[in-house]
Image (cartoon, rainbow, N blue to C red; front, side):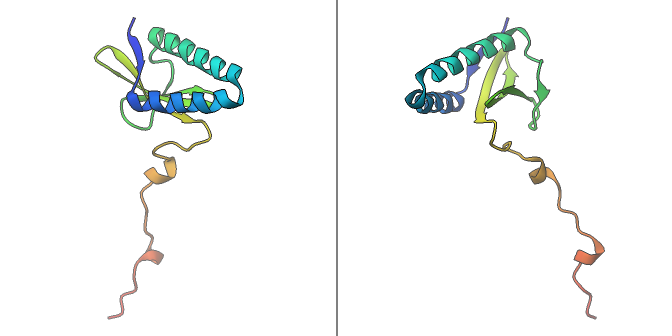
Length: 111
């Protein structure tokens, strides 16, 4: 079974989120930690159980209210990023669309 770990940036983000939540509701913070541990165990058993991510080689894991971005490398599953589910993806679909010009968008030829 592969190891599941958090990247340094994901760990920093999660610890900051837990610290913020613990000030409001310590029990909720503990529950969120337990949920992440359960999610890590699931990922170790079923690393491909989630949908493909926007970036090649990544997968998106929904763990409301959070979304995890994972990648697998050298037998290790890394939670590369964690974000609040209300945040947009790093590469939102509208940013991936190419701007298309139409004839109306072309500059006029004044010759």
